[in-house]
Each structure stands twice: as C-alpha cells, then as structure tokens.
Length: 195
Image (cartoon, rainbow, N blue to C red; front, side, top):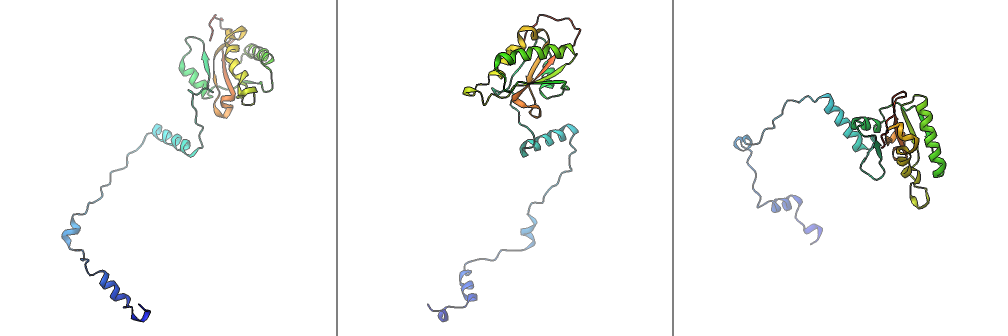
C-alpha cells in the first residue's frame, strides 16, 4: 500500500476502537471506590527511636556488625563474674587505662610481655587494659598464634590471680585483633580462681 492509498490516522484509530465500549462515569460507579483511612500517628518511645537509629546505621553500613559467636570472638572470666560486666567490657564501656601492642613478637617473648604488663597494670591500680595481638592473618599458615595463646596466658601463671575477665575488643578499639582485660581492684584479696 502506498502512502497516498493509506487511510488517514483518524480512520485507523476509529477502526481499531470499533469493538471497545466506553466506560460509564456515572455517580453509581464512582461511589464504590474504596476510601483511604488514615490512623493517627503513634508516638514511639525513646528506646524504640534508638533501636530504629541503630538499625538504620546497621543497614546503611555505618555501624559495625559484630558476631560474638564467630571463631574470631573470645571471652573468659572467673567463676561468678556477672555476664553483664563482660557485655559492658566487650562494648568498650570501661575506660582503657593502658595498652600493650604485641605485633611482631614471637610467642615466648609475647607471653613474658603480657605477664609483666598485667602485673604492672595491677600494681598501678589500673582496672581495664587492652592487648593488641592482631588477627594472625599474616602468621605462617594463617594461624593466629598470639591470639590463640592469649586466653591461656591470662588464665595461668601470675595473671590468673589478677584477671577478672577478658573479651574481644569493640571494633573501634581493634575488634578481633585486640582484647580487653578487666583486672581486680588492687588491695582485694586474691582468690585462687582461674578462668
């Protein structure tokens, strides 16, 4: 069909719409449309607002995501230490008063340094210290020697009389590459508890 033999667009449209019925717009038809119902806003509590803020930060990637049940997390305590104290320690709620960085140390030298550090910190009356051991990702075979040995060092030898508990540090303080250690108050009688 040539351009000149083609019917005008109006005729094509009328032909295409020949079987279509026009919808009724009478009042009866529109009366049954559902009406939206709006509820009064509900006030949320301060705690709920805080939870929503934390959830928003977690979803946006601004907040650290912490999995205490992973193989990188560690904790220990003397028998009878309140679990809430360990949770507070893990969240970094205690003031850090000293730090020991073990990066680059071999195990034997690191053990001596940890024992000396714990004894010295306790002698100075400090309560919360941090030991940075790294995650061991650059260790031979990827085995974190210092990190795996640290709980033993804190539970045996002279440190066992001074350490109340320890836990993996909060992400801003080194996360899985560091450990918080909570010490007994100086002057308290030392019990023979072990971790």
